[in-house]
Image (cartoon, rainbow, N blue to C red):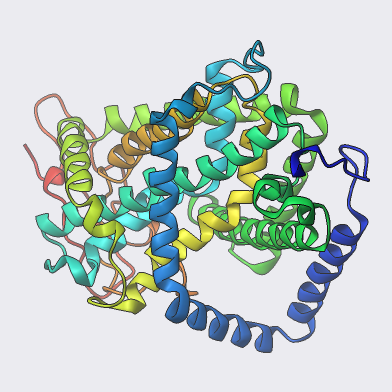
Length: 437
């Protein structure tokens, strides 16, 4: 049987064909970007448009299938299977496991998109929502779609990819290559050219998916330095930020799971919780408590409709710039995140694994987005439709049309009014909690 096929390569060794073709392909794209950036940009835009127009429906169906499959596996009799030997115990504590999983899956985007996405949807609601911009209904829709893009669906994608790899690696002993998970479908061909093609595709998806996140992260850090310290945002600063982030990644990787990566992940979660608690306490606490259940209710009540919406009856350009972009982004990250989550999940049952991967990060994201996004500073000065993840333009962040000081500064008896500034010709709409009480 295919499961009994011996691999010619020793466990943990590199496939020279995949390694060589992967390095050559990545270097070729880098050289193309340096020597002919304009043509690469044009090719990327036309390719993106073609993929969205042709396969947009497929991304929608695939994301739904991943989520449904993960729930079915956890609820079925297969949920009792242990990822490893029957007597294996989890290698990491639950806190360390969740911290590493959460930091790997979504760390770099949470702080930025927790504010940027609700603000943009508030200023320019999704066409299918049919609500007026900068209204209460637009705010509800903004939180609804933000939770849709960042909770169950992306973690359902990660859960299925990681579960397949963990089962193949720890239960069947086939190795940790992506192709090893396809042995039941491909048989011996998973160890030949077909398997190498799968691994090569995973390499390209991981490299360019990571490059997207690294690039967005560098832009965020550089813009933050400009706003907070006055250091001019420039290409040089962005390159320095990329070098620093890369160095931090390499150092943490060399120190191993039990030291650098575990420590960094736990520190990230502690810092994020500290920031969240500060915003919750210093901000409009009562309003935030109202946002949380209302956003969850709106999200769950519209989940089926949002999950099955394609460009057939709504604006396909909006879907391509938001929902389909996100689904493609999460899928491109699935090989990398899946391998890592599988590596740290040995000894857990399938039910425990899926519950932890699907519900714990999603629940944490709900609380995070409700607090950070729900207390946004009313930066509605941005003109509708000015930005999306694929627009290629810098978004208007809270530093470009917001309160010049904390809008929730307390006095003994009332909330003080805000001082406003805006780089736009339009005056920003004042959020209701900024008025004196």
